[in-house]
Length: 116
Length: 113
Image (tube, rainbow over all chains, first blue to last red; front, side):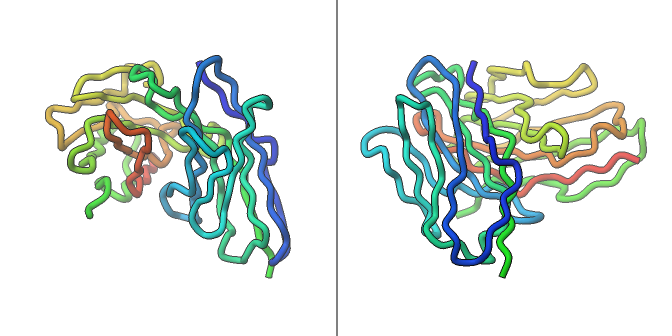
């Protein structure tokens, strides 16, 4: 079974600071990796995803993430955060090519608070 | 394009009452997922369907919970009888079987008093 760990539960940054949120997963096979964002009171929206190819993926709103297979990590980054980035961020994984486990397994989430 | 549509958006009900949550997946998507989100437990998969067939219901908390998908465009999650600890946001999501991206609805915010 897959599992996902997000070590930062609550991060507080000032505007223009750089962001890196950690995500590690546990699974013996090939995985697809995702970052979702949930703005206050809203549903989850896809930020970016990795299936294969270039391990550095770029998503919406200036976010990017790097898949490091040897470290089982998929950290999310943004060079300069804005107040509007205040939200909860979820890392998720599903098994690639395994139709029996297409459901996403989510990490516990990281609450990002950006102060103006 | 219409996304995943859920109803009701908000429901407040008394303990012991039956609750039915509804979901219409994105047209053409044949995998459907029900998730529950709480502060204590985060996002938990309750059940998911592929081509209207339940594939994994190991996350369904107990017999009070049931889910159905009578056709490709509709699913229900029912709680009977409801309890205060069922208070949560219930998300429905869908994807194509051949695809890997899962799209979420706006959630049903359930409060059981």
